[in-house]
Image 1 (cartoon, chains in turn blue, yellow):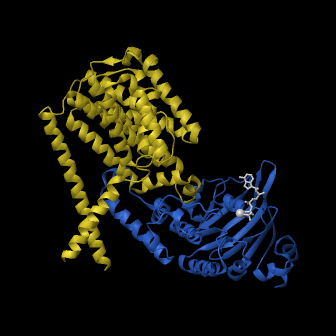
Image 2 (cartoon, chains in turn brown, cyan; image 1 turned 90 degrees about the vertical axis):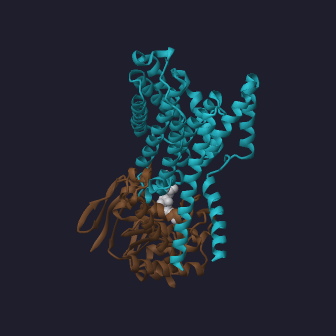
Image 3 (cartoon, helix red, strand yellow; image 1 turned 120 degrees about the vertical axis):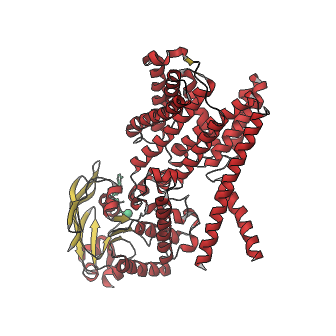
Length: 261
Length: 333
Ligand SMILES: Nc1ncnc2c1ncn2[C@@H]1O[C@H](COP(=O)(O)OP(=O)(O)OP(=O)(O)O)[C@@H](O)[C@H]1O
Ligand SMILES: [Mg+2]
């Protein structure tokens, strides 16, 4: 059962075709990799899926709760509300806010109290604020950032900033999670830990995950399927072992070494 | 253990709320007495009124510019709407109820104009928004001077506006604004606004509709600027369009920047300090602007983030205080 289908998605910036006729399908609960050389258009695909840019053409369809919804051209905050959350390649935390506030902000879309309750601090303000606080702390505890809750996001070490981005995305309560190079800049030990965490999150949060990553050890280990992008086009799709032995992929991206491995 | 922490933090919250309330009441009573015994004379009281009005203006602009990150140069425009609407109504209905209606109507009209102006212009960023809001304030000024002169008496202005702003009014409106705006900022709505300032794309990607919250901050700010305007016209009993020009908008912005973008207590402190400085310099009119200007340059050189940065005074202060109190209690038990 697919949860997201992407059909002939295309984006051109002026004359530059960043993404051309990309079609993909994510099954519910899958962990799928999106790989390719620098400038292949991977991040652009994420930006199209999350509404940062409207696509030049093509469609994105989400299947959730027996409903079929078209997402292309919608605003990012609406797409997020429909259940797609993401992290950013070039970390975009709310740098000058605390770790806790970064997470709380991601929960705002589910807060129901209105302006009246806000200004006059009615009961619903207190009860909902308490709930948000508890849920945020739960998430932070699960992902081992609770002890840093009052620290400013910008003061976290790099690896923890990446973790916080994931926590923040989870806080929006998504069904699909898009991770853009979550292991970038991490050492092998941190990467191994992250690999485990991603697999664990998928199980425990009922997620479908699409993952951009250059670290092949991570991709090959946890992805069930992989799409390979080159010059904005999908040049291969398949299981890790199929991708490793695909000639075009080896030429365009992996190189001989990985292909032989 | 967990329960203990909760209980003591509940206690602490209660203590700090009670402490705040008590100090507010004390503050009110002391000044009421000083005014009753004429220690605070009419001149000093007028300074107090100016401070109160500037606090409201600065706090409401801070919500738009400091917290939500939307650079507005037209705050005096909203103030003028409140001033004119309240003046026109109280001139007609000379009674406290007339004033209350004028106050509310002025604020609501300012808020409505805030929506009308905000919806199209808040799509603009940074400098462009600043220019657009500047233009908006100029248009409002011209409307009051040339187009609506049947009601506003044009460039000559309105005079003899009934005076209703006494100490209780001043106190309630100023403190009320500060509390309401603080409540807004410390809520999910406020956090949404702040997240837009921090990173609009990230905020949008986390499900926060940036246009909605920008307009919300803008309209709330306009509403309170309207209140400030109404207080101004009611206390100083004379208004004309030029009182609410570009210069006034800049004056408000200076308070916000000086106090710290994103700090309510900073705005309050800066409003008080600046008014006191300008009061002491009143005796030297030739030197006044020079010294005032030099002071601004100095403060910005040594504290570019403003007096408070984006921190709040009351919070850290009270935390330290109640923390010490808690320790003492713990020691005793
Ligand atoms: N906003 C934009 N305006 C113009 N060109 C863009 C824009 N965003 C991306 N591009 C171009 O589109 C192409 C694809 O970029 P993209 O960031 O999607 O690559 P990527 O696969 O994520 O690369 P990397 O692995 O380096 O992150 C690049 O040539 C890039 O310069
Ligand atoms: Mg990229």
